[in-house]
Length: 246
Image (tube, rainbow, N blue to C red):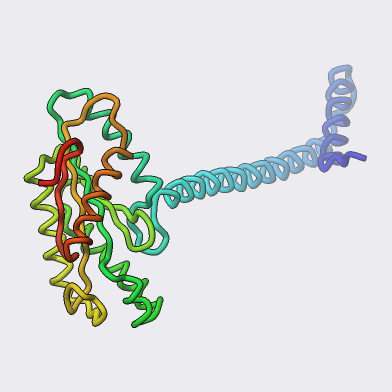
């Protein structure tokens, strides 16, 4: 059975309508009844205002929570930088935008922390998490332009996206990241490339054209990253999106 929470108020309203009709037909006007009706109207008005405020706060809270959740979807929980999902989606949007302008270039860097498994085995996973945060921060702080961004691609692998950046600019950025990470001087006694934490980087650049996808750049940069590892780590390798190693 449905309960009417305003049953009492409805009765007062119905009686008021009847009294209005009777008064129009010459009945005595009762001021006591009018006072009761006025007070009841005021009470109902307060209730409605209270309900409205609660509803507004609830709606506002839900909206803010939804924005917060949407925002969090784009970020890596551990390092606080963008995650792989955002990077891949945004990379494709960037390619679509740049392809409309003839001659626009795009560079992508993929990088791995060298011998990170040995770092975890030596110092523990808690220290490993701290290391990941420090590397993510260093990479992000190496970027100066607002359109450039870094992302955690997964595990100890990171990516940097550089819109409107040619080969020379990409090489400069790779060297800068290598140097800045070494300046952090995070001890890593099991690193066969140095006595501190280092990274290996793969770099690719191309003039953006219609039909290209983000996966093309990522795959090519990954191939360059593999070569950096094969050649001793703690270095970068550049490969054109279409072409031979340079």
